[in-house]
Image (tube, rainbow over all chains, first blue to last red; front, side, top):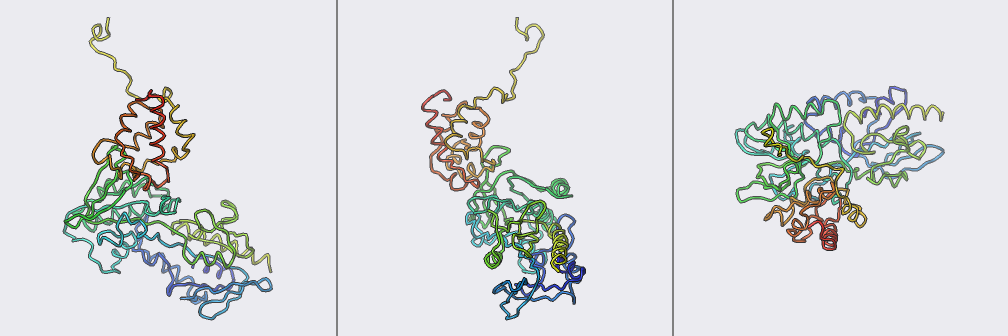
Length: 327
Length: 116
């Protein structure tokens, strides 16, 4: 959306193709954002406003084929439409890791095991579930690195934003359910962004969140409907277990399912993490080896919203230079 | 005359581990046969899933960490607690062949007996 708006501003005609029936992708599912706890709508609405009536948006459209004819790309859509363009920007984003694959954590088996995305939906009131009694007492666990940094899940990379998402959600849970203690189970806490470390400290200082350095090995249901998790507190050097009333899985990024199709259609390269591979990690982060095909956002690896927006602006300029040189 | 008798206090041996004086010969042997030995990120999954750790004070992660730091005392005694079930290998997120490491350690220790 941001790249479309910028390219329109620069005087180009843009067609935005979206496979879903609405714009906004995952951000539309989030309730509020790190690090400043801004409602997600405050990001999405200005982005949507910026393209309104200026960009041709094609919703619920899948790409059937892409052919190059007389130097132009001809893209045919599932709706039967054809689009002729001089450049293509691939912004397929990411999918969330399917937590069902980590069977040992019991997602889809135990009702009290949910993902961070489920929790965002709960906070925004979309799914209408009652997770816990507001006046109840008990313990909540947040499991970091679910499907990330895990050879067994097939994803050895770090998904980068889950750490701070966990901290953000831990604080929100303490606010929502003050009678519940919150425990974060982590391997490393990667507070890479500005103000992230402040959130971490606030979670400890103001909200009393406990951080346990150890990866949970398994979760199982107890007779009284709690979830027992096993882990080693590696800083204490002892295997431990704890019963929890709610378990949140911080599922990581995987390349979007649709990206694989575009990889085939456009003969694009991917890295060993299966995300798209730009020509150069420093100087040509948005370029592919195909002339006129560009990349932006989480299709080249896990990114925060702010990073994706910045990249969208950068790629708009790159595409603009390319189109001007090709005139 | 002892320091204590003369001055009324004693000097304790330094409790800090001096890595300059570590014995890294065992580490090198393990590394040669299983290079993944250094890939550990100390997540504790092995110890958390360990069958033996539920009943004894066996801690595979700490044992390996000690070998990596050249601290090899009492290893054979520790290793004898392992049941060789291999759950640690199934769970390791870094894909380390933990079972092979245990078997290598057994082999090396049986050969030399110097670390027992």
